[in-house]
Length: 369
Image 1: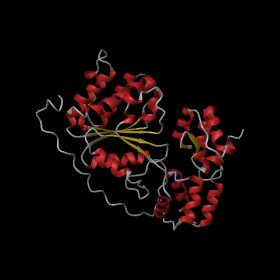
Image 2 (image 1 turned 180 degrees about the horizontal axis):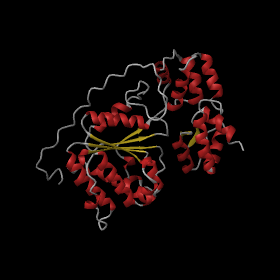
Image 3 (image 1 turned 90 degrees about the vertical axis):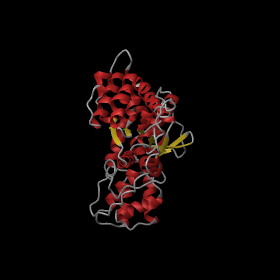
Image 4 (image 1 turned 45 degrees about the vertical axis):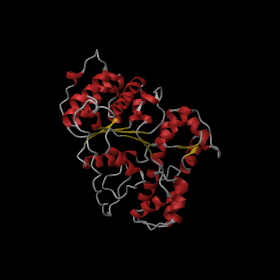
């Protein structure tokens, strides 16, 4: 039933965002910077106005938020906070990480959509009744859409926030990407005219712009609220240092950022180590001296990237071009997208440079063969 046909009054605007929880008190125990930042952590750094915009958007009917950034830039930490904001408004929330799906799930669009529906049903604590809605003559997309509309949305009687993390994995299958993403786009469009679909709010998180053969105009990647996470500013780095109980000023921030930029994970890992006793400027100097070597705190992080590059010789050759020159380099589009999604490069117009000195120095040495 369309809104024009319905006799029901137009729904009132959603409630305002609840009063934010007070910031947690400082703790003496440092958190190891591994994975997403906990909701109650003092080490989460807001990047205004991103959080405020996301909290406002998720309270709107038919909302769609697209979060994009390279790996380890804070996408999942932001996602968790948006979902928490929705939960505080008594919305139903479901988080799906596509990396958790078994490889066999991606064998076909039908198998993927059945897995998708089953997972959402489980998270909502509703029985999975796929066979009651699955008719091969209608096709997988219609089956999935009907299942959501009739079995899920009509039963929960409240907004549903569906948060999809690591959707880059879907791009690896052209068949699934060309079916799944246009379906999400159609659900977002349905919210403009069909009341039941107003309840669905989508959050899509990805690392790259490499959409493969996907038609961008039939996908969710050019609608909704786009959010691209930036690096920390010097002020944010200094603030984060203080949260680690480091008495820092610009003379400390500048050399660290000269090595790792404002990369959230790299900055926080450095501060975590520097906050361990003994504390002093000479410790920072030693850390930076060892940083681009196998003796430094970033050794495991760098070796993981190196392993990926060794398994992908074309990517290794492309990055070698970037790190062995002082000028911006133009790369083939696919190579640039992949290196960007890994977080190893940044863009300057249609050219790229190393994301930071850490990567330039380390990979210039390792890829010099």
